[in-house]
Every structure is written in structure tokens, then in C-alpha cells.
Image (cartoon, rainbow, N blue to C red; front, side, top):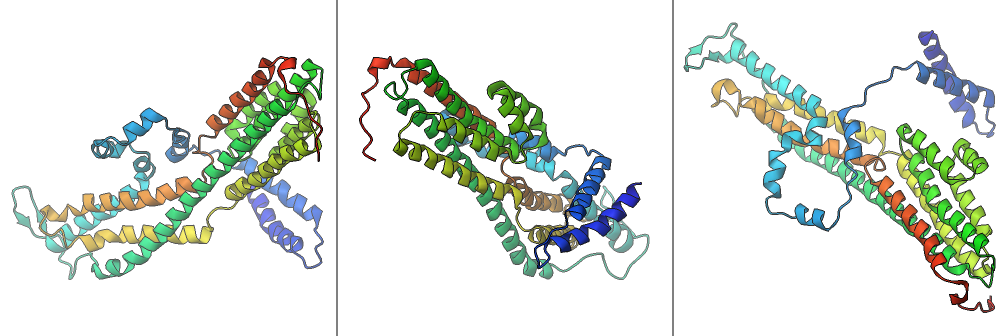
Length: 403
């Protein structure tokens, strides 16, 4: 059954692709539906893989610093601490397999050349003849690695810089959304004055709806660019803070952030604002929508896969062959065995750089998004409380809007 589904998917997928990009612009919905159904069935049949250490550790990388953290970060003994915890590092744990492969190749080369070319020297320093005397050792000259290391460095540097740039832009997106959602709550609480809505209960209710909708939108975006593990908590939060009908519509929406922004706009529409004030609030909503699109772009488009794969192949081949070039320079060590830790250490740091870029490329699951959303939630609730601190007679008298 699985084999037949795979064959069916392979046949239908190219057909759907050609139809979708046909010159006349006509889309065959039946073919697209068939592909979707077959892909869903294949995903259902796929075995559930255990998360890797790198995936499990991402939730512990959502660092938020305060004053004490910065002081600790600048401590002069940070180098000693970082070196002492090198084997506990998440990067080290994430590259264990790759480093083990390089160390295994180095060990094999040391054994091979000892037993089939140079001979084996025991612990007393006595040299024993090789089992079979080969004409040449299993080694390579260092020149190819010297020539190619510059190209490898450029590839790794370019990829790492782009990965960090994606992280920086994602953090900037959340910072702007954070600011604009707080601005919406602030304007709602400050501009809804008794002269425009004398009913205090209704005024507070409308302000609370807008404040809640502000951070609910952020919660929708958090789930949109997050993993499925957050689904149950997301649905619980929405059903707790949003009216039942709107909550179910938001959960069922194909694009939850846009539905959340639509709900925010509808709540703003209920506020007793002047036309100019309404325009100012809507400007924040427009900015929120634009930044939401930027966050989706980062989440949905990785660094070109052909670049990532070529860099990975280049790096893996370079490091797996490196012990061949290191065997001869370590000739003064016991049976050339120092080639093993040297190869492992070099591969740890180079594979570690690649691991850093992989971890940074999708930044949303390592950013402290939950803390940002909760912070906005608390501030939005405070905006409602600040509004209620003023008695009705303490609000300034409204003047006619000249616009």
C-alpha cells in the first residue's frame, strides 16, 4: 500500500506542477486535490522520529538578559568557564555524530598505516614489522587542503552571516510588533474619554477587547511560526480570552495571524474615536500586517538549499579526508595516534560553525517569543487599569476635531 501511494504521488506531483504554472493560468483543482490527499496519506504513514538533541535543546536557547546577566556575561573568567564546559555545550552535543565519523576515519588510517605500511611500535618502544608491507601509506599531501581552505572559509562565513542576519531580522520583526501592539492598547485606553462615550462600563469593555485582541494577534503569530507542540496551549488561550464564536473561527482559520488582525480591527471599530484618531490607530495595524508578512517570509524561505547542501558536502568531504593529510605531520607521535584527537578537535569547531548557522537559520523557535507575548499581555492589561484609575471628571474636555 505504501509503495503504491509513493508511485501515485510521483506520477501526480509533476502533473500538478505543470498545470499550476500553465501559460493560460488555468489550475486543475482535481489534480491538486489528489496530490494533497496522497501527500497527507504519506505523512500519516510516515514513522514518528524521535527529536534530536539539537531540536530538544532549542527551547533552552531563548535567552533574555537582565543587568545581572550582562555582568556575568562580561566576567574576566568567562574564557575558563567556556573551555571547561566545552563537552557540555549544545553545539558539541549536536555534532557528536559528525565528529565521531572524522575520529573514526583518523583511527582507521592510523591502524592501517601501522599494520600495513610503517609497522607498529608497542608501549616499550619496540617497532614490529607490518603484517603486509604496502608500497605507500594511506595519506594525502597537505597542498590540496591548503588551496581549498579559503573557498571553504568563504562558504561557511557567508552561510553563517546570512543565518545571523535572519535571526536579527526576526528579532527586529517581533520588536516592531511588540511596540505597535502596545501603541494600539495605549491609544485605545487614552483616547476613549467620557465625552465620547459616557457609559463607563461600555468604555472599559471596549478598551479591554482591543487590549486583549492586541496580544491575541501576537499569540496567533507565535503559533503560526512555531511548532505543533504549541497547538493545545494556543487553543486553550484563545478560548479563554476571546468570545466563543470568534475563538472557534480563529482556531479554524487557514491564516490565524490575519484572522487575529481582522479581529483586532473589528474591536478598534467599536471604539469612540475621531476620524483622525482612527487613522492613527489603523496605521499601527498596517505596520503590524506588514511585519507579519516579513516574519512569514523568514519562516517560509530558508537560505537556498543548493547553497546549504553544497557547503555541507564540501565541509564533510574536506574534514573526512583531513586525517589523510595530518597523518604524516604527526609522525613523531606514538604510531601517529595524535592524528585522532587533532582531527576530532578541528572537526568539532568547523562542524560547530555549521551547526550554529543551522540553528540560527530558523530563528523563531530560539527567540524568547513567549516572553515577548506575555510582556505585551501584561502591558495591555495595565492599559485598561490605567484608564480606570481616572474618574470621569478627571478626563480633559474634548475639543472639536479640526480634521
